[in-house]
Image (cartoon, rainbow, N blue to C red):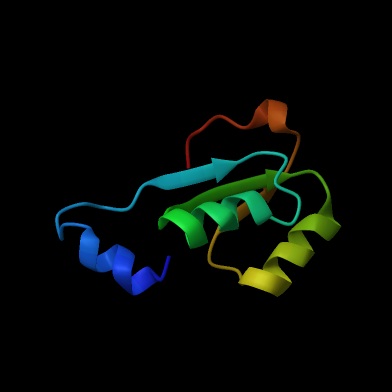
Length: 77
């Protein structure tokens, strides 16, 4: 869907839903939620620095992307 259509269909008081992804790799699942459903990508995690570098090269630095073991992710941003 085109983002403008999503914005027109969503009431102004309605904040976008957010998605967080562990084992994110290059972030294609999270970005699919953003592109296909208007979700906000709130958080990404992986242990591979190359995966984060690829994500940032493709999508920028606006989303928090932590490099750490998923077992230590708490859900608090």
